[in-house]
Image (cartoon, rainbow, N blue to C red; front, side, top):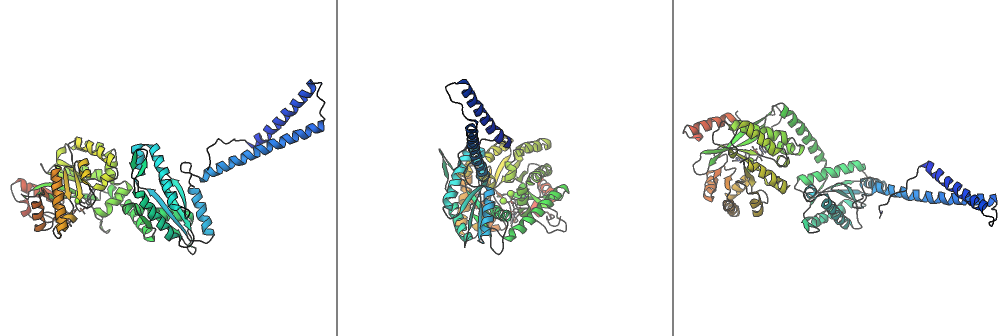
Length: 512
Ligand code: C2E
Ligand code: MG
Ligand code: MG
């Protein structure tokens, strides 16, 4: 719509001086010609003056017109995104305001691409730009004549509709857009899968929101879509605000808790499936919250991950666990690692430092990662895991059976160990299909040279099934719960002295 062009810029002084100069020059030229030629009749001063005025007016007209065009170009640039030619955030604010003034229901959908950053990182910004343009096309097509679409910047787009049942129609448009976006986009020779997460918000005639408030609602709803697993749309709900507020509080409490030394580690032993001897311990993070309501790791770790606090916290876990495990002889130590830690380029360096400082044998350390850690950014994860492995540290895939890990995925990452999730172990005890799945998973792990641990084993039947299916290790309350460091000291000392560790009375985690 707006071809790029260099606007002709003139200052107000220029606007006066330039035409005057031109007129003066033209007049002087005429006089010069007249005075040097005896064949040309002398022009009367009045006619000359009229000619000068006409030239001056023509020049003013020309300059005025080009200034208006330039102004329009500048004005358009302020509301049009140059890459996609879609209206931008300013235009969105104006449009929402205007629709609200007409007294209509206004609905807004905020769209955020799910893996744009990875595309930019892996294929470069030129491909990233092409992808943005391709997505803009899809959004334009989904809106058709019903809704207006905008690019808000980066990988964020928006759609706006106004009128009766605008929200319902916009939700339908959003769902069909997600369907289109589920298919990979073809860019030159590449097929790139980029999904999107959508947040929906509305402003009703009897409960008007400002454009900024509406955008905030849609943004909060969009982040809930991301948190809920992406490729979905979510309507804003007041409860999200309260939840956000609570998350912010927990984040502040975690920060203070790290400073105040409120975190400690518990360790859950893993036993050999056939002998029942303790062969490994898994470090599990605990938070002493004093009189405040207790919070388990499944509640506070996602907050630490979102805020980036998992980096200092996770490093503390690693260092502390390695220091504790130095006392436990040849027992393997397992430490859980979050996606954010794995993405942090400093992580392998810090890990190397911890191993060097403590002298802990790298082959006795096992890092547990989950599938989500790896699918978010498989190439970065693969590189990081290669560096970690080069130290001699082993990698275990945690919670297997809860996600979508394919055979290709398992082959690609070549885990040293697969940990079957508690849900799989539990269901295998009650339904045949789950049992078949568990047996097949173990056979697959074996074929790929991976060791297998069954997690969350609570009954003798589950333990027997895990053993028969070929698990090497078992972890679960049937054997041991997560225990304080001193209890692990006692268990391992008993085992080293040839006693049965399970037979000695140990302090439970809660009692410690
Ligand atoms: P996970 O790594 O799969 O750890 C096993 C979880 O299952 C632990 O819960 C453990 O207490 C529980 N569990 C073990 N055996 C049984 C059983 O027989 N029955 C039942 N019902 N539960 C059992 P916990 O300690 O609450 O930890 C939950 C999750 O939090 C962990 O799952 C892990 O994903 C995460 N987590 C814990 N500590 C850390 C940490 O230091 N860093 C990171 N990134 N994540 C951690
Ligand atoms: Mg684990
Ligand atoms: Mg697990």
